[in-house]
Image (cartoon, rainbow, N blue to C red; front, top):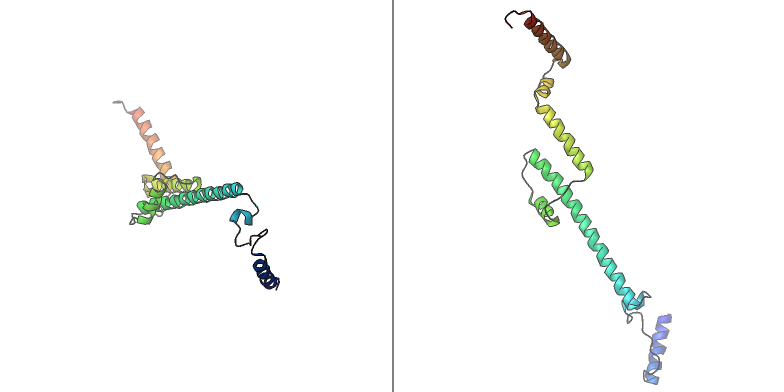
Length: 157
């Protein structure tokens, strides 16, 4: 309501005075700095800070995406799955040299240790059912001791 009265009466007054006098800028005519109650320099500095913060956030986000892509590509290599071009592109966008976060690196290291243990001879023996490794070790050590004692008794040696 006040807007209508102001526009009707204000328009009539401008016509009578010829638009002379102190002109007030409406909110739509103010610059963005004036609208926020800042000087032009303060507003420019504020905008510069916003742009810098956005760039930092974008860089951190790209880094995280590249770390995840590295993690996925590691498991694709491990399990001989086809490579994904989007993962390769994300890694290249960051610069190609991406380090995994500590938690992910520990997971991969533990997984590699388990794989090595499974691939070893003792790991393969432990997979055989009904095989007691402790008794097997005891028998092997007893056999070695018997061989040592028999070697001591042997006159030739």
